[in-house]
Image 1 (spheres, rainbow, N blue to C red):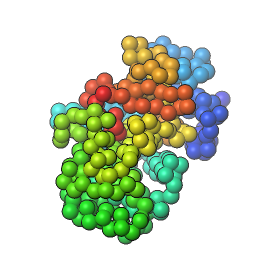
Image 2: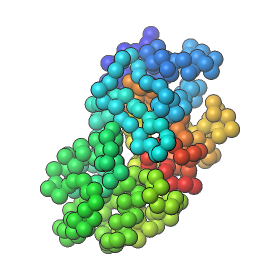
Image 3: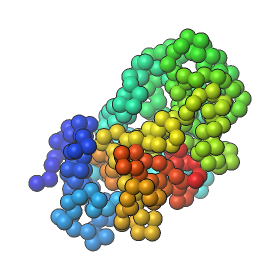
Length: 330
């Protein structure tokens, strides 16, 4: 018997390590029934859903499908559509989200899991390239965290670098817990222009060079940012338009996922096969919050997993439209 959408939705954010596989298989069967694009893709691989009884056997939809198809389960339309930023000459991905509360619940619960309540922080967002366009899921998340923080100096900073510097200095003097969420090139520009010594500051880069600066390896970026802000580690967010969940790194490029998200690594030479921990390959993501689109996504990122469930992002297959420190080259 295939579970109903309502019963699956109720289980997403209460899932545990022990129940994840069973719920993922329930979601797979539901999406095989109600998501025509995903079902057609799986059927084209000559896969019989009746014989798939482990998450390792589930086919992952190539992320490029979000550029060419409307990936929706059971719904005919959605008022909320997240779009990737894209680059000149490249088609943007479109993620149709008929239930935006799923996204809100996902990022709120994940943030609280890894960082605690947003009300404890002053949240500063340095996201110029995202503010300058519509359809950014990252901007929606940042807006919500800023609102939840309720700190009078929380907010977005587009090009007000001098103002941001003064705000950070005031927060440093007051001892206020502070999160600076920024696109990578903007953080680098700011750190170069206004170097600080703010050891308690949480600097979280969301990726994004997009030709604004020369491509840099992650370690190089983080060394520059650590020196520029006077911090011991640079945090990172791993998210993308095609997912409704994020993983976080508190340093050294090691990411942890919330309980409803899991990363598996596929063989770069055989995309339908998985590799073991410690081996480099393509990153496949199971995001159970993607209940209404597709929960099983084969990204264009390269990475490896560890035995404790954490993972690293080591590069990418191409210049796909993604965000996170996966935008930094190996």
